[in-house]
Amino acid sequence: MTDRELLELILQKVERLESKISGIDSEISEIKEQQKSTNERLDRIERKVDNIELKLDDLEIKNASRHVEIIQKIDEISATAQSLSEAYGRHEIEIMKIKRKII
Image (cartoon, rainbow, N blue to C red):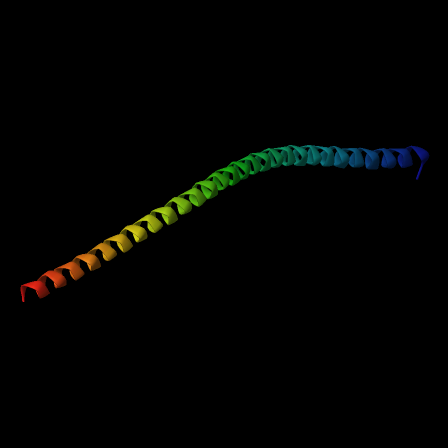
C-alpha cells in the first residue's frame, strides 16, 4: 500500500468519524431541547401543585372554623333542649298538683 493510498484510507475514516460526530451532536441538541421542554412542563406542574396546596390549606382553615361553629351550635341546641325538658318537667309537676287539688 502506498503512502497516498494509506492517506486516502485515513481520510475516509476521519470523514466517517466526522459524520458520526455530527450525527451525535445533532442528537445531543435534540435531547437538550426535549430536556428543556420537560423542565418547563415540570415547572408548570410544580406551580399547579403549589396552588393546590394553598387551596387545601385554605380549606383546612375554613373547615376548622366550621367545626367550631357547629360544636357551638350543638351546645346551644343541647342547652335549649335541656331548658325545655326542665320546663316541661316543672309544668308536669304543676299539672299534677292542680289535679290533686281537684280530687
